[in-house]
Length: 225
Image (cartoon, rainbow, N blue to C red; front, side):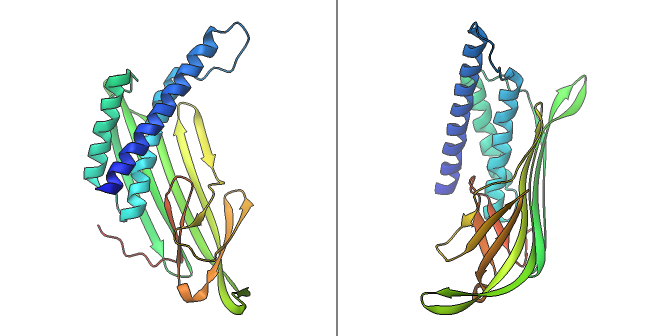
């Protein structure tokens, strides 16, 4: 319950930031100097993308997309939509999660696709995808606490993909860090590629990105349906 309340609070804070962004865009439209103006329909779409990412954060914690969590946060979205007149349209959605692999190669993919009404049917509106793929990349020795420790190294390809009225945006440098306090080597190589090293005795490791999405490296997947 505490986790759920925290997610709702984070969602509300994100929407507040979106509202401030909208106010700034409106202010810029009224200034006499040429300014970069953020399109109003992008603001609604950004709110929906934030909702999708909140679902993905929760799914990465549970190992599945939870219908109850999706329902409660969607109600919160439309409550805020009504309160602040965000003009977010009625939406339908499809969620999908895939995971595969063992301690050598593997990965996970989360996808949330939103559709909005259009001319008697439904048309794509906002898509959010989070995908991680890892591959074992050998071992090395590292001195830890005055002792030589065997480390495993993995190469990780990890990104967020946001598709909406603004086009396609891929986010790569997501500030990965270990979920638990442990000596881990994390190097960002650019282009959504990372090198991850951790003690071989651990078997696998869980990382968090800057949005608190859990990223498993070396996991053996045993997902619930």
